[in-house]
Image (cartoon, rainbow, N blue to C red; front, side, top):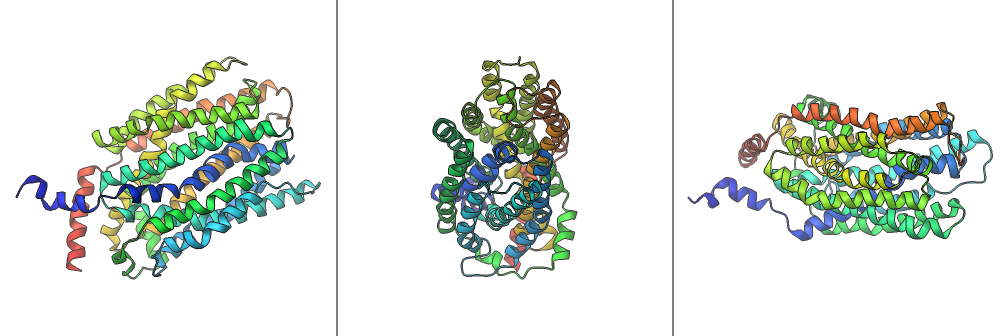
Length: 462
């Protein structure tokens, strides 16, 4: 038998996805990228403190209340999708019925009510965030759980994730450009500008989610297996060493992205003297650089192991993050250089941890005999959102402790120093820790192929 006709080669060819399927799946990440991935971490804390005029400490409380609910709903939705049995599959019904609530609740986030009392305003925004987070979870968690089911091939998953992250990064890039060039300059008052952003984004989220619903299909054989009890699901999840490693890498790699998204606006406005529009354009430049580096990341992941590609890209990222400390106050050109330089690291953080996550599902199936994409996705989405809100909460507290004054022409030296340290030193330390975890990651391409071969034999017998 020729090498090209081996069972392993035939299995890999069977797992190849069409470009149409990859694009349909990738488009579904548009809303996740623009909303929770770009606009919320980059602007929401600033919106609460400088637009809604909520005390920074109370803004953290409002977001913290939302996260208490978030800690519960992600695993619940993941478990629910594992147990869902419909003619559309286990995951896609959530996309169909969750698309409209997702768009509507995002628009509601950006409405400033006529409430003067700070406590009432805190609970109002906490409630609005809980509504949005629920709708996001109902869409985002099942969407994420589709990834390991669409293809079982190790490298094809990296390709699928590259398509997804191309749409994700380009969506964030275009939204930042549109907001910076057209929306913010059109309004003297930022309040209606943010309202326009919220409504326009909410409207576009609905059809993009539905594209994934209509453009993908689930595996019938995975839906035919009866699910195990929730406690048993958690037990197998916690025993999965490779998943524990990946979830830590995901958390540590996304913390710097969230830090940059959250604190960058403060750094650009108060350290370099940029306007809101210029800051949004700077955000777009970072994303543009990440898009350019996507083919490089895909090549590295195929040429080396996924973890080795991640380590190489992260080292370069650390160098540029530390370089922020050397930027003089009022200097704009060095910021542009840093924005371009971090592209490889940002691109890697988007693709590689997400490409590792589907592979650990087969490790679980080897142990449990079940396909539990939903519970894994639920915890993964929770960790992703937790990292975002931790950064927002930490930033809000630091700003309050260092005497931050909303919309002031100049901040205190203590506040400026804190902002620079948060956006440079802290991410560098976190990224070093992620490299240490990635170095010990043991699910190589060959080991994953061996696991797949054993699982195929089990399924054939079953």
